[in-house]
Image (spheres, rainbow, N blue to C red):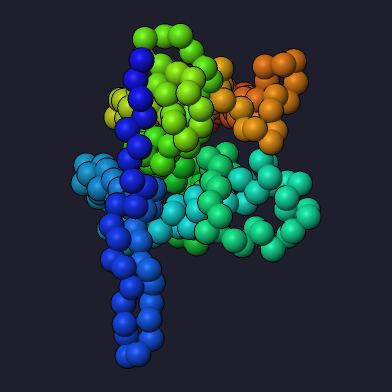
Length: 275
């Protein structure tokens, strides 16, 4: 049996700063925020690496813009998804809570929708096909997912269900029961394994929409599986059948949409295969 190491969620504490007589602070940099910086910085580095193999398709400026708009869509969509999917009752009672970002709360599914919207409008602004943009960016997303799940673990949130497995971990701030370290399961599957699969798949020329299809099927399937080990949100519980969680409910359309994209990519594709 393992014990959660009780990592300080604050990575850097700068205290208060006196600026021209105005006291600012305390200023704290949390590990979860550091993970976001790592996620977006890693996406930029990976995109720049891929661009170097075919610089005619994307300019350096467009790569920077992709990361910026992706970050904007992920943060805004993630916040709205958390509020609407997981805390709708609280939102109805206090609509302004949507803007209280310091209370925390991010949803991958909401962030994913936010990224789709952001890239749709950005693609139109640079006269590129939406699916060309999505196929290019999809291989970099799992890196950010992995960083986010590591941030969840450091913050001691989104813990798993009780288990008697030898690697069960006690989260003292929750209770004394050994639990699945589900954050690390998600880091391994949604981050590392999914990154390897999508990166390898996208390294060769594929039909348009195929890379997105593989990502959507992969993420949705991994998330659906891990939800069996992750403790359901206490204020929501199970959605149906005494086992279906909100995460599984939201992941199912992703799997279906990904399968549809793969079908269309390989059966309804009039254009030649492209990278």
